[in-house]
Image (cartoon, one colour):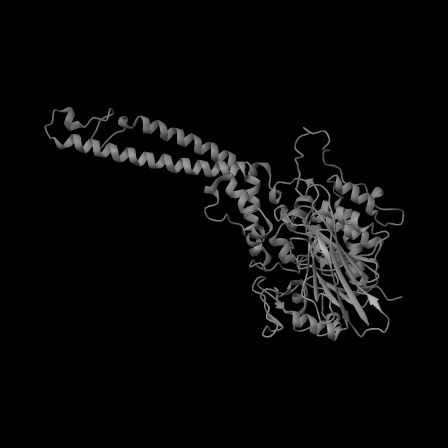
Length: 548
């Protein structure tokens, strides 16, 4: 059967190529079209909520959404109401949040490891707590009331609105359980949410009870989805222990993801960089040194798995892409073996990347790109104003001490020297001593003291400049520390504000700085056997109920 694949972009001419496949005698066309959606400039507009200097910026909604508004008479959530409330930075009551989490977990628990769906469908990559970009994504893809969706995982961490993202998706899942498919990503785990910022976010906005319930719900998420029996959707990639799709269904998924094994590989594995691949010598799987766990799988490994399971391609997330997507090397049938989709534009507010979604309908694959949307501003890592203001205090203290040292330098001749009185005159000279070496000795000591004080002044001035940089570029410094594994790269502060901005500017530079955060964290694993929570109790009661 002839299979034609076309890739087109508004900024580039279309490419056409054909291939053959033996799946059917009927002619079939598969098309990939890439288009772009522009909204705003792609730059983050920080909306400070501490003052109403701009009346167009509304204050946050401080009151939790009433249960009577959130749920209808049948106890089903109203996603559109929750969405509007979250747009105002509103929260739910703890009881309502736990109710939604428990209801959704029960649905996830009854789903198989590998879901199946027919197009038309929209496929989304990582969202990473970027709620206002998720709203843009939904406006492009269509309302989930009328549109099928597959989300490839990584709903939380990095962004400041992970709870809004996951609670909204849970509301949609409860209302449309068969058409809203949500898969597990590597960040849906206790280990990573504790290492990154989602746990801190939940404790800031809700409570430890909500966090524990959310982690138990994440343990129920399915691992993969097959569309049209041709497209395999998952978060990370393939595993040397998985030869067939049926092997995925055999995985015990109701647990914290391990650091090795097939479940880990589905969440953590990456395709081999095409620039590094030699088709003649590259093994199918090699250890993934970038991630610190799992494997990197070659083009040959992907082709072998696809052929074994009569699939066309693997659609995955897990990796930031400058243009929001990446089409890897084609198979013998002329279709990319792997398609990577990333749906978090301007990732971490520093990558300056575009985002993309896949819209699949009747074998026409349309890749839609979009830019970032303005979002309200949080102090980094949800820090309070006192912690944030420490660089201001340090700078002022250093200014005081620098001025004190300047005064000492001006009046250094008033400094006491060994054996001298309060006026700096030696006792020998005051008594009419005739030792001619005393004067030279006094001058030498004074010069040494003066030089010592001048060095102190220079050091204090240098520190003052560094603290001024910390104060003026506080937000960028915190971003830089987050990208660079918690430490400021050596010498950056001495370069001043422009040096800090340059260090976090651009996709490739941000990706290089952020590479330590792409690894399996070295911190101890969180204990998954936490105190029973609302979700574990609901799952236990559900399991103990007799089958109809």
